Image (cartoon, rainbow, N blue to C red; front, side, top):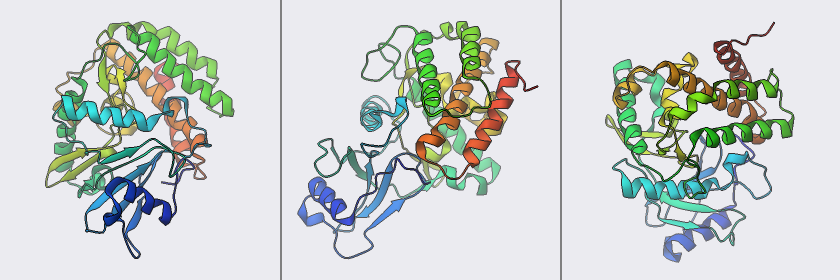
Amino acid sequence: MESITKNRQSPATLRAMVERAYGPRQVPEGDGWARELGHGWFNVAYRIRLRDGAEVVLKIAPPRGVEVLTYERGAMSIELNTLDIIRTRTSVPVPAVDFHDRSHELCDADYFFMPYIDADNLGMIAERLPVAERDAYMEQLGALNRELNSVRGKAFGPLTGPGDPRWRRVFTGLFENILRDGERRRIDLGWDYDLMRTILAEHAESLDEVTEPCLVEWDLWDSNVMVRDGRIVAVIDHERAFYGDPLIEAGFAATQIPAFGDSAAFMRGYGHPPLTGTEEVRRRLYGLHLLLTMVIETSYRGHSDTRQYDWSRTQLDVLLALFGHRHA
């Protein structure tokens, strides 16, 4: 996926990064030792073959001069913190971190190395799988997501603080940040920005039902799941994690927005009963925040292809109809 946030580096810089991480004896020689992994949306990632034949992945944060969404600032630090929490407090499979560098001496951004995971990306193969096999993976994902959500924080908000004891205030802040990001670029939502604020205010009481800060990934789609031989072998891309309401997880999105697929297998694996009325309202608010993000981020990514923008705008109309708002 093409994006101006991808911080590509020259072969010479990549070699220097390898040397710093693994030592001079592992610096690759010749050609064909580095290949960009193209399915990501935000960071650039390279699959690199070290001199001894071992394969690793190098992930590099966006360039310093590229403007990102408010919640994406410091995303790589969030990912490293999240990986540490998951490894030490759950059994959910995640990549190890071989080396990370925040010095900005070799390039203008943070980067880290991890082992290459020899597996299929579920999001890339899901449509080719038999329904039963795909559902089995989504059940596994639901169970793993529940375990991730079992990690408790001291307050809602960023993993490293400062937190807030009220989820309503934290989510309202996230919601307002994405609206301001859109207003700053004058991005056309097809709707008035203040209507979004009004909808949140009218339904914000539903957020007060959430009293326990849980680790949430928010971005745990099937495209961030690696599978092999019928099992999930790793969950990747953790840069959007925070302490919040588990219902904000991607696996629940389809309960209110059918275009995201069928949530039944995920919810079965998670062990979540049908949503209550209040939970449905919260999930619609989370869907509204998600669709606003998907519309607005296309400008910040520099997308020349309008498919994501067009699709997200259409789904925004569908969701707003559930709140009683339709275009004349």
